[in-house]
Image (cartoon, rainbow, N blue to C red; front, side, top):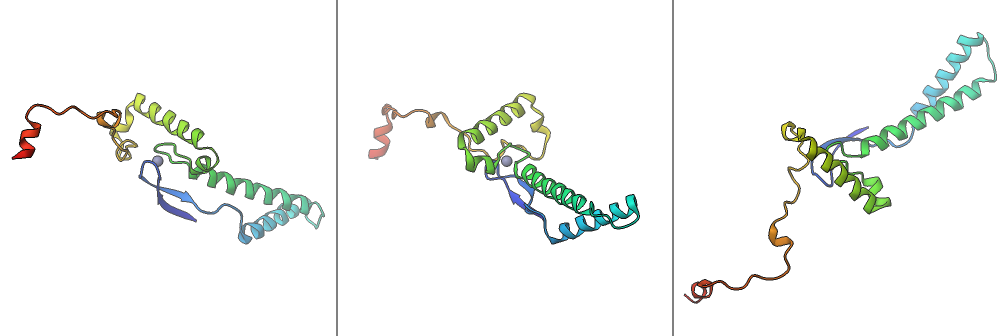
Amino acid sequence: MVKKTYCAFCKHPRTVYDKKHITWTNVSLSLLAAVLLMFIVWQRFNPIVIVFFVLALSAAEIFTQMRWRLSVECPHCGFDPVLYLRDQTLACDKVVRVLEEKKSRGDYLLKSNNPFEFLHKRKADDFTTTSKPPQAGSQVSKRV
Ligand SMILES: [Zn+2]
């Protein structure tokens, strides 16, 4: 039901609900709840139990899907793999927004799950495309 996994972006461990839809257990519990509600309200069989059963099934399915969808997003960096599959630019913008917000607050420095801990650090050489001119003495050391 709960699966431990790692975030694809910040590489921190987290838990995700792997149950996306209701099971037969939820169906039987919804039926039991509808029958109990019927006997509490009318003290005898009433065909409106079908409406209660369908409402209980709908509530269970909505709750299960919302719980799964909210657990998919990383709480540390805001990376959402479902959104990434639909639209990569929206997912990237969301991660950038969450990381900028965390950086401006600065409280991530005191937490054990620092979202910046495993991110690739850019160097100044990554942004330059031109190579450096040879400096004096660099060719001499290669000849020796
Ligand atoms: Zn993450």
